[in-house]
Length: 288
Image (cartoon, rainbow, N blue to C red):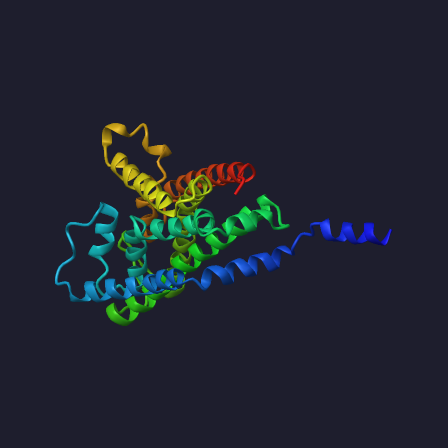
């Protein structure tokens, strides 16, 4: 009897507390040198942008799109709007790159290093493992966007001046409302980055090569940008993940239009559901 009880204790798989798993995942991701580099880059980019704008004698006329060009034209002596400019510019490639990098490391990076097999054998369950990985990616994406927004606001005030926000509509928002608009933009940009990261996570679950995840996801973002610029393909634009990104500039209008922003959030939510569903379907059938 004693031998049987001991054997049952040895073979019983107990589930680790979810909060401990989440904390462990965050510590693991934050200790990576590439994470520190990415977060440092997120803090440096707004400072460089602020210095560049302060040294420029005229507003740039070759901005990637009209939304960014409109923001760049009013950034002088309008420091708080620097965060809007930086986040919109970063949404073209930098922020999708960061989200894709962490999704690539989460599964395919672990598989390439030989650690994923041990994680799949651990007593936490594959859906819980995917949820923990997705949580770590989501937190780091939020931290990155928040750092960029906060540093952009501080750098804008210090370098460019101004304690209010001149909107693209010509009105001026007081400091409190300006901070509220920046907080809303931070959330909206983070949701879009989550959507890209979810697609990258699905690809990461299907391969053991992180570079494949990076190339496929970022290549897809580039293709979507190109397709979105072709007016004859306007019937395809509603399903492109990049379609709602330029409309994020509506946060800097007064009054703020909400239709395009809402459509962008719903589109991102669809990509989130599809991406995580495909990742889960692959994880539960993966053998290592």
